[in-house]
Length: 396
Image (cartoon, rainbow, N blue to C red):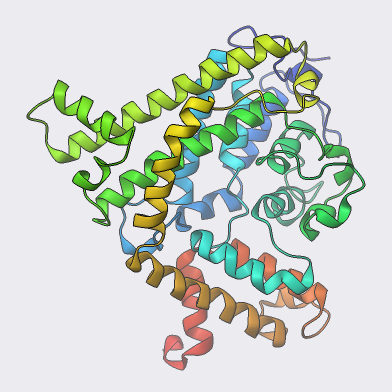
């Protein structure tokens, strides 16, 4: 058996690549790359990962090239996740892999696109972007000769499924799961009633750290609110004040950058301190011990959770509900609903290879083909398709 040396010694509770639970379809081991490295490489080379450059977080892609996309967000999450994993003695490749994969299932237009698609799919089993990510990596990616999907390790699939924690309270609660989850081969083996392994928990917290700070940064860049506005937010204002004390003549753009850097550093330090405290209390002897706990081990402290609430409230009121964002998101929702309504009623408008998978207008099978098609779209492609299908001038 190939042994995979780690750059740094792994903690006893880390996910050990030498003890990985394997893939759905067995493949020979490599001496150069661990199973988790191979998973990460397959994610990076996937079509779904490339499409993230055309999917947005909050702003629609054509609004400006300096706002974050799902791709830039995923790269930033992976950097934070790898840094935290390294300090905690976890497998950095698995943490980075899960960070890079966590948004693959998002449809176009951010949360508005997801809300619209979930509403359309409600009669047909619902829509959940984490389950859709699993569907992509187990079925929809068609790159390899020997299998559909990417044939990832159990640990990676588990981490994707449980990005937000346990999905059910007991294994029999199948009715609580979105259809895409139960369509995955051998989905029961993912132990959906337990917490994920430590690297997956790190990726989830890195996601929280990244979007809180980067949405603040993007909102300031877009002029949705000002530095004076954020100075009134507890914790955030303290960080900006501290930068101004250290650099009295700093420009506003550098002030924002330095303050966001400091906020990320503060959050990472808080996660590390709280996680070490929880690990010491639980004394896990393996990654499975961490899965078996009744709480996450990687988390913010209660003190920081209290500090975070005003920031989340500020972003909700001043960014996510800003009238300019509302207009973009309203339009985006109409695009997604319009495409879904047309394709499900007239499936022969789908590309031929997808039409061949349908079973007639407004059936569950057709709805799921349409859902997969729309969920893979970039913002610009969805807009272009809507224009062509609803506005004849779009073809000319």
